[in-house]
Image (cartoon, rainbow, N blue to C red; front, side, top):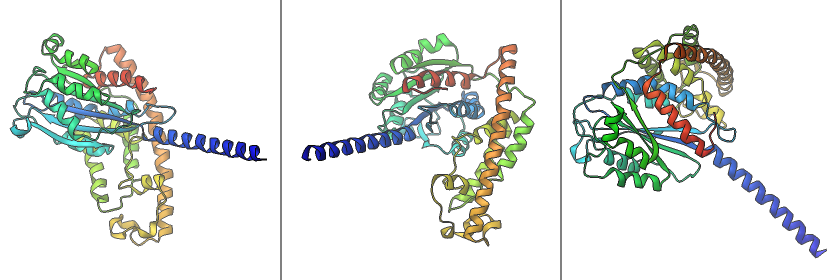
Length: 374
């Protein structure tokens, strides 16, 4: 009888430990994050680089939205630094953290559009080290952590040796990729290739002065119309809700200043799992947690909901969720046709977009090491 009890206890304990392991593993997968730090040279010759970053942000995000690891889409966080701008503090090495790691895609867009260029000294080693010191990289070994540094001056400038900075990155499982804006061989002699090799990343070159090729498709207009309908499904709440809601429209407008196709790419991003606004939108928030609608501050809600009961607000949120899901599915279906059309035209015309192409290629290559798939 005693042996039977001991066996029963052992089996029970073993089953609990398996369940605990499975739960913790599931939590780890859910928390797996793709962390990308963009270090952009904003000296006076880099207007083209900044414009490419603004225009191609959404296509890069769209590619990452299709990434899976063990069946789950990893969280995406992007951080942004500028360096080499004489308007920045010389005591800080002409370096500024523009944005800490965030999943707020509208915030990333807003800060990219705020960048301006001005002459200065570009210290690559120092900006890499600064990003390592200041950003919250975390300790999750499953995370995919990458730095992309872009510029056009020698990689060796500044008092801090780039190899010392990259050594620190490697010790924290952070891959360093370099993007030289100019001739391939010039980047090699300027040690940009050496920086990438030492950092375990990719050395890339782009023509930052090249005009971006936007391919118009028969599906663009329908996606733009759906995007306008999509915006109407957002329900702001909380102290920052209205400003975040208006910023969404502002970033649509910023995309439109570049090209209508950029609006289309942004709309596709907004239809993906990576575009989440639970911080200020009731639809996204209600997907993540149980909402107590009776505790919402009515003055922070849209005017049409301020006189509604908690039950009426909940019903309204549920209806907007259904509407949003339908619109997002329509956009995704149209985008599949759009991508096929674009790929065909790119093959016919032998065209590609510079920054977008090299970054996506590098990300996909390095993501395989963390068991990502597309």
